[in-house]
Length: 113
Length: 114
Image (tube, rainbow over all chains, first blue to last red; front, side, top):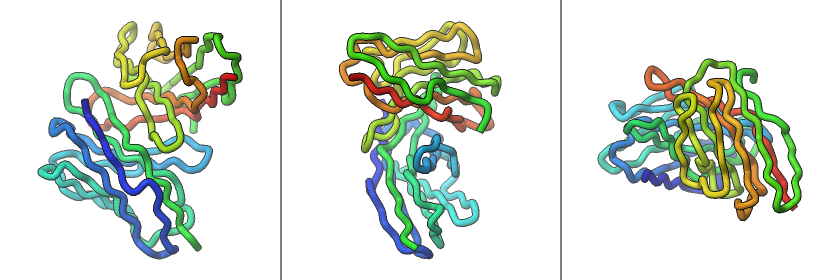
């Protein structure tokens, strides 16, 4: 089955700096890669996603890049703010019959004011 | 925040007892999922279902059971066979196929077994 590895497990940045979280996946048949943000005590929510036919996608201060050949994708957050502090999960969806998504182990991002 | 609900928010049980966690959605989503969240281990899939009366085991199904008698409901039973049941349980739902595979999560149930 699919295996998703995520690094780093914790990340501290100064407010205004950039943050990068990296994920690798194992199944070349995966075709959809979402990122979820989970604030303390709250449910995970989708913040950005990318499909396998696209190399990069941006949404304001957030961007995701995908390298299909190397089977890795990354989340980039620019001009970080304290409200960006949360746990971020990457995931990969297998393109086969069942809609199964495998999540990474999460990155706890702390933005220091 | 509406759309998918889980109850109760906190649940306490004695070891050896079965317990059922509720998950209901009014989003008209076909697919529903149960995840277990432990510190440092991300979200691990327990069971998922794409249609009524059909469900598939996820990566950690042992000691758990589910049913999908209605499209809106996907209850999870944590049985006494689950060796380490204390965890945070998240239910999610999604539409099937395009244009979006986004999963909508419930608020979660924190289960403590002593």
